[in-house]
Length: 112
Length: 189
Image (cartoon, rainbow over all chains, first blue to last red; front, side):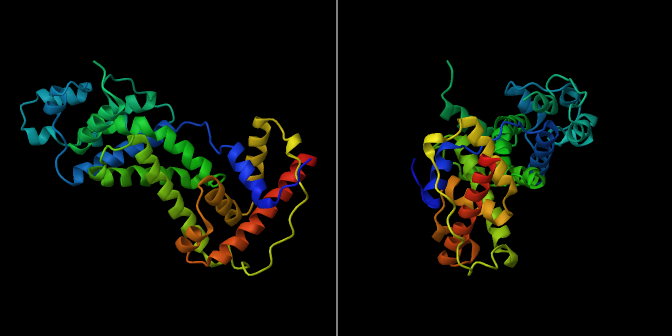
């Protein structure tokens, strides 16, 4: 049996017990963070256009693809169109949002 | 050919900086769970602040991303920002006058001796630590985590909170004694 002063006792506890949690971040939090980041990015200039993103090989959602092939300028294709998408609203406010579109970033975050 | 983790990190950073929204989603997906778990563990049981801090860390990371040199893993870099945010949070909470207003009191007497030969199993210790931490007054909980899990010195904590090193040492002494007393109570109950 060993007596330890409080200081050493705490050091031993800290060494032996890792203060970690196992709970994953809620999907709605990931969605909100993503929306906030893209919003911040769009405030400092245009986002990468959907044409460029597609050329890089990234998958676009059906809505993004419609904008990409639409007869509009690149500037319009650089807008943050998720702002007007109901998938974003659902993802930000629902734990398990009923969204399934391939290429949708909110679906990716829900499944992450 | 598969890219190395460093190349992968650099490519992700470059894409996020080019405002590629798909890369931004990948950035969030890659680090959100780790950040969330870390921040929960450091703020427990004040969970209502965790989501705000996750937000702050990501926004701070995005703003600092041009400075990422790629000299270490991106995950460690992001977690470093989180650690700073936790310290900022502790600092703000501990700076409140009521947090350590009785810091000049003498430390309470050390609790009874501890027998490490009879330590509980690892899982039981972890649960007990969480249980005790959850019952401690917030200033005590913060200084203990800051000192023993975040490995900050009393001097560093003093500088960041505007308190003297001595005042922090006294607060730590009381926090340790309180922790140990509650730990022993939990063991005997």
